[in-house]
Amino acid sequence: MDLSLYQQHFIVTGCSSGFGKAITEVLCREGATVTGVARRQDPLSQVHHQWPDRFTPIQGDVGKPETLDRLLQATSDEPLHGLVLNAGGPPAKTAAQTAIRDWDEAYASVFRWKADLVLRLLPRFREAGYGRILFVESQSIKQPIPVLALSNSMRAAVAGFAKSLSRDVAREGITVNILAPGAHDTPAIKRVIAFNAEKSGITPDQARKNMEDGIPVGRFGTAGELAGLAAWLLSVNSGYVTGQTISHDGGTVAGLFG
Image 1 (spheres, rainbow, N blue to C red):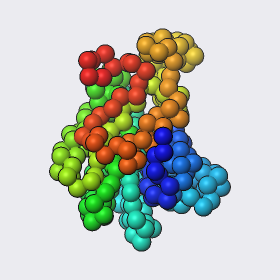
Image 2: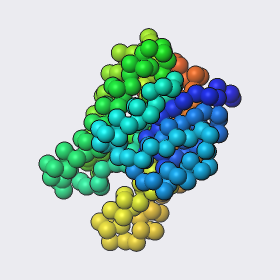
Image 3: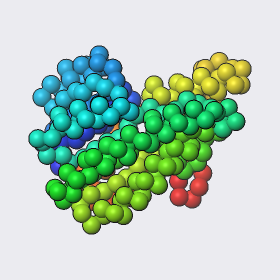
Image 4: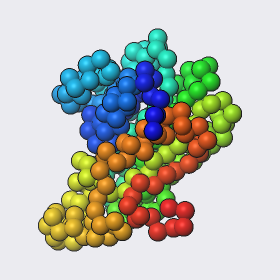
């Protein structure tokens, strides 16, 4: 299938590892250009070295307004076709283990900056009459994960924002969707494996095996598999799909609408 991404321009956050890096790579392979944001310069430089003509790096923390200011300034003269909002999640804790400061930090790291960036870029999409906005969140939106109380709550807030926005702009050529990944073989899964190992008094290898045994397909997903679905949702072919939270979880979510 021709995704028709050639010479389209996308912003991808958290682009130096995991899902963000995989999505950046597939977009570049399809001929798109990407302005990517990440906190660490060395991984950003590596992606730029791989795609020097298609990737523009911006080093910074998306949770800080000054990073978003630099991002908007750097892309102000270019057409913009899509936005991928991706970043790491909050610490693994049960609800009873949290303190109020954990909720303040989770709001800032999971929700606030995403709403801020989307609302800043929305006038550009509206002026163009076209846009693809894609949040990369977690299966915890659909089926809470016991050790991820902060993620369960704050990502649900993202889902409420995305669904509301999708209906506001549905007639303007702009789609708003969420990918809800389950366990994937990315750096982010290590914190959950470590938490489960410590809690159960087992080795990380055994904790990983226990997690994989609980997935219907019997394994973790890969970032590349998710990136292929993301690329389609970012393409012109997905214009009739909006306001959706789409699982990518190997069948883990047990509900009828997983």
